[in-house]
Length: 615
Image: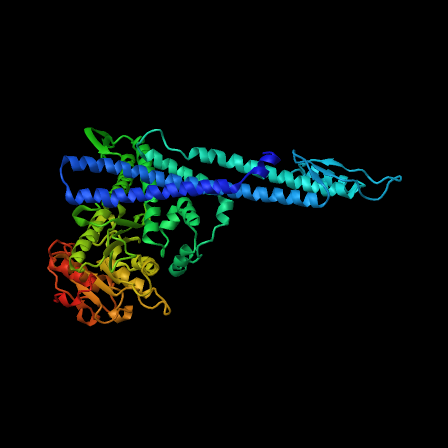
């Protein structure tokens, strides 16, 4: 890049272009939300039949296009700002070098050379003449640097050394600008869509590649952005985000959707936007993994060799160990894809039977223990009058998350019935490594199933506590200190044990869990003898028990696993919970439609305590 081009470069023009792309990204996002949460939702709520289904399919594809446009334009905006930042830094260096040169009586040529005036002590009756120098390679070549320094010391004109310094500074600035141009040109060219109207998994794989390229290129620009709190304190995170400009917020979402989506304390709308990008990128990546894995299928069967004779048994075959391992990995990949499709299916059901928009507050296909991570809300919890948070128990996996998301939807419908027109949000919170087995020798386990240990809850409890703090701060930022809403935390089975550990993980200054009510459903114990030991006020701890295998879970947790304290579980009178009437005939029946158990949960979540029927 030459001197004239860099001097004429206007970073503001590229920053304005970045603003334009960010505006397009915002409009695309708004269009996507309108399609998903108004147009498609309205059709699902009022229309049925082949025509309605065809329209919904077309709208779904259009929504994908807008989401892709939203994401890519956000990346273009960040890339343009990164390019402008790099070029602005180079231009500032050039301008400073030129200004210093002119102040020293030197003249800068169009090619970046520096002419210096005569000066110094007379030699043979003459003042040493001036001259012209150009940028050298001394900054990168040790030999050239040594020769240059020797020449400066030996030159009779002191202006020679000054001019060399100015020329080198100018050369460095031009080199930096050329490198920025060479770095960003291919990255910006890569930020373009295919010449079709179908957003495929390959397109989202390209988005991930584009994001990585922009992040790597924008390191200098990223350093200029205000940094989030190192400890992730939700209150400080909320304040940090509120203090960012629109440009800075867009940059963080486009460059680090995984980090932003996981940050407790941020608005639900922001986390949802970021996590939907992570979801689409992950879905594409896992499909690529599955497609590649399917091509590696080994032979399934091999001849059976008799352990007695050591000879092949004619006509008999057995599955090979290689195929079994291959099939296990295939099942894992298919399971994660199935879980991701279940999340997308929830988005696609918005409006059906008045179901509100969904907010993906957390997502990771692997999670903390390779079980996955899904935090999804029905309705915006930041502006809800009543928020119910459901924590699932043993055996929860991404591949089967549709069951637990379904319970969140059922809870929303039932709570909404009793909310008297107030806004309701229900959240399914799955962000811990859940124990896999509840029974001896179940799912490949041993005599002592994982659910008999508190270790899983102890590790996951602090994460739930942190999320609850973030939920409170996000609500405070959106609704104000005078309208913090009513929050109910409910756990099922081992999920109640985790709630107990979440409460116990809080320090004295933190106080109790930031919720109004706690419901323990089918609890094997909460690691406490009394509700008060967990900081839960009297009258705000609730419990339900069921028949069938639910009794085995509670008795096993009480007497065998010791998940309570002093063999006490929430349904014991001495624990201090209000025992609600329940007609659940087994451990998983607490959310059956039109059931007493479901109605009582919803009444607590809606704050209608006087209508709850007791056992």
